[in-house]
Amino acid sequence: MRWALVFPIALCAGSRAQTASVDSDGDGLSDALEQRLLEQFVPAFKIGAHDCAVQPAEFAPNLKLARVQAENGTIYGQAFPVRTASGAREVELHFYHLWSYDCGPHGHPLDAEHVAVLVRASGEKWKALYWYAAAHEQTVCDVSQIARASTLHAESKGASVWVSPDKHASYLDARLCSAGCGADRCVQMMPLSIERVVNLGEVGHSMNGAEFVRAQGWMLTQKMQQSNFPGEPIMRLEQLPETEIAWFHPGRHPMQGVIGISAATEGAIGKGGSETTESLGKATESTSDAISVAGESTGGALGTSYRKTTHALGKSVEAVGKAIRAR
Image (tube, rainbow, N blue to C red; front, side, top):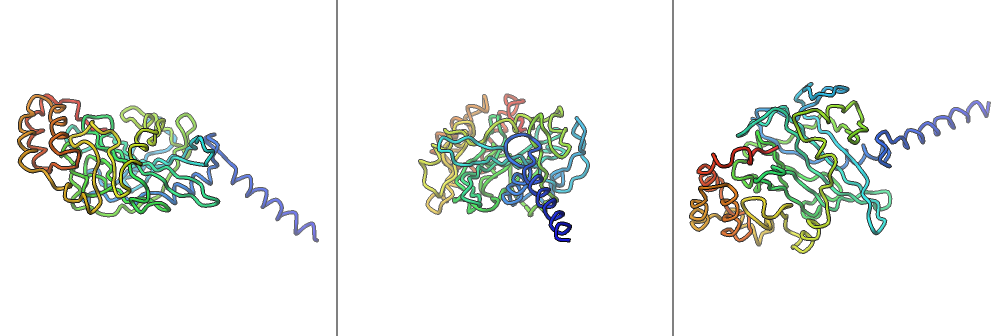
């Protein structure tokens, strides 16, 4: 009788250990750990109450095309280990809010947007170090941001993230929503009720039937294959006061440099003034000129108001063409 009692318990313990060590995408992290981290650090998203695409979409599994199954607030995640010189155990997490449509100017079907966080193990616990928010990546209007987790009060949980209605760019502060060439406005926002967090795995080693990541029509695979925490932006951020958020690509957006979020720089958030209006008014030949002049006249702060920026950009819309198409 003693063996009859002990033997099934031993089998259960072995089964639990085997399950805990399963690594479906072969990246060195167990599925269980990846899911635990994704659920711990999933952002608190704020979305437009009247977004034309309703909510982030769930896509049909086991298909090599992106077919929307429901617009129900599903968030997709990715977790992969990061090599460090110090030997510290770090993991980069990506959170993808995938939409059926980009409904803004130059809209298009399928919209893959994301937020990322770099986390580090501290004993059995994990702590976030830096957050990244993608906003109009790889376009002339790129206003992606990077910040310390402590600045956002998001070291042990997900950061608050504002998603611009219809265009779906991600922002680490609501006041930054007008930064994307002035086309974004975070108004009538509401908390996203997340249906679930689904692990995508890795490109070529998908999990949970996520074959759709390689579908034509969006840049999801490219986003999955790159880190959002290279050395240069982190080094630049670390030179700034801890109260501030930084542009990820300084010089690629209308207002260059640091976005001041602290009380000391809050006044610059709404600054635009006549000098910015005058400079932007001269930028009629190309959007790149408008961006360069605006960056100089605002002194590197967020600066320009939505109305003034859209007025200047409206004069150069023909020259912009495909350049301002946000993905």
